[in-house]
Amino acid sequence: MEFGLKDKVIMVAAASKGLGYGIAQAVAQEGARVSIGSRTEADILAAAETLHQETGAETLGCVLDARDAASIKNWAAATVAKFGGVDGLVVNAGGPPAGGFDDFDDTAWQSAFELTMMSSVRMIRAVLPHLRARGGGSILAVTSSSVKEPIDILLLSNVMRSGVVSLLKSLSRELAAEHIRVNNLVPGRILTDRVKSLDAIGAKSAGRSVA
Image 1 (cartoon, helix red, strand yellow):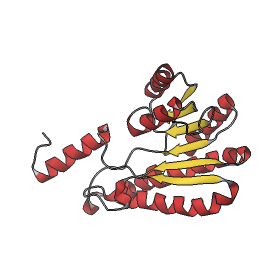
Image 2 (cartoon, helix red, strand yellow):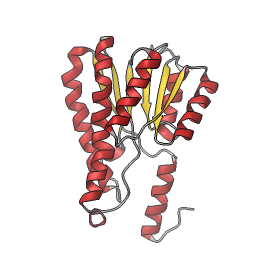
Image 3 (spheres, rainbow, N blue to C red):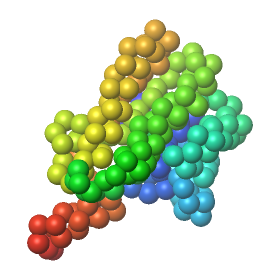
Image 4 (cartoon, one colour):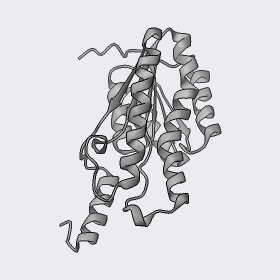
């Protein structure tokens, strides 16, 4: 199927594995040039090489700390330096820790805000000038089905990801005249390492086995 992605430059965050890698793989298979970012250098470089070997696409792997504004700016700059511009951004980050209201102090709330909300703001801010330079583009943020119905033991994620959806809705209206699409991907349960970990936490809390 032709999605019009051939030779487009797509940035995908948190893409050394899991859903982020799956998205990067899908756009690479459509002929896009792909820049992926994640925290661990060895993992992201290996993922970029695997992606190239699997798809033949041009790839770039960059160290990316979603909580750090400078790291995000560096990722955007490295992408533009290699590929000459950006056509699309996939905003993605690992989720905050599981737990209920009594489990979290102000520090935990602030950390979740930085990881989920501010990473989205900063990634979009870093890439938006490059989309404008292209005359348009696309922003896609990966959130969670919890934005439709809160998930037990995921209080921080429920709250922060709902905020991200409000950001995206606002930006979709604000940027439409500039031919920049803004969309939200709302995945349900996908068998990733994070889902396995959350299942184990939930089972332990309920006194049950995940087997």
